[in-house]
Amino acid sequence: MKKPGPRLVVGSLLLALTAGSAQAGNADLCFRGVNLSGAEYGEADGKEGINFTYPSQQTVHYFAGKGFDAVRLPFKWERLQQALGAPLDPVELERLKTSVAGLREKGFTVILDPHNFGYYSGGKIGSAQVPARQFAQFWIRLAAEFANQDGIVFGLMNEPYDIDPKDWLDAANQAIAGIRAVKARNLILVPGTYWSGVSSWETDFGKGANGPVMLGVRDPIDNYGFEVHQYMDEDLSGTHRACVNADIAVNAIAKLSDWLRSHDKRAFLGEFGGSEEPDCLAGLKRMTGQMAEDSDVWLGWTYWAGGDWWPEGEGNNIKPTARGDRKQLSSLVPNLSPAAPKPGSCAIIPSQG
Image (cartoon, rainbow, N blue to C red):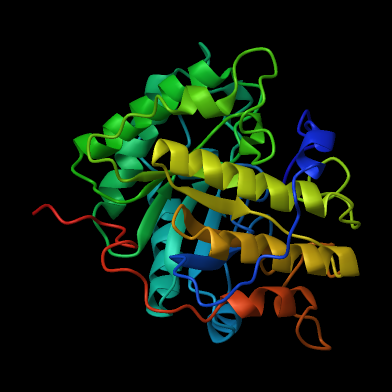
């Protein structure tokens, strides 16, 4: 979920675009999933079951039964690697691996998500406190643990912010180079900075825009996509119940689709969500429908959020209540029955042949 920031961009321009009503159909998006939040909670030295939690079997079973096929799995970098440059903590690594194995047993693609917003213990990636090479070293260690495992995607970082785009690009490229250096061919999802918002992808906040800068991503095997996030509330942060900017969100997806086609790139919507308000329910259906319509450039999406510890009153919560399914589910279900994907188009580990 977003922090409020400079992301409500050029609303009048986007609203001038034709909103339309994209139909979901049986499009060949690769991933339709949910964020199962909880392992990123608490301080680094927190106790499992008290300060943080991985998804329970009950939660995993529920979302598998509803037809979701991907899980974005947030976790805390400082808990997995307790000092920069250090080996991964064996206890936390085992927790992560156990959770991943349980998700894979249910058929989920798993997107590993260090949910740190571009920081480690308060230090910004690319600063003297957290040099970019240390971020790369973290990914070298993590990638080696999951290299070339079927169904495992590497999400480099959740929502970097207050990092200049060129500095973030350098850090991302170092991490990608490290991942490929350990022979891991897994799909990599690369965010931009400024919380990686769809509607701000081409907006320059004074240090360059994500769009032109992130075209500098370098992957030796060209197996990556851009991870972007988008909400529909008043400041596009995902922290308010009313979805007054659904048109901006839908039109931003359509606009980014055009940008992706023009540059032969792909994207993945790692976070989006809304409450049970009617404008949000309609917006969710339109957003997923627009991506289905533009499935030639969209890898798919993961809704924010599920997870065992979300308060029942949290607006974006999609975990069922004692009364049954949340209303948001009905807006997502039309996109959970895809046609067969194009051969090779959804390969997470590309062939070496």
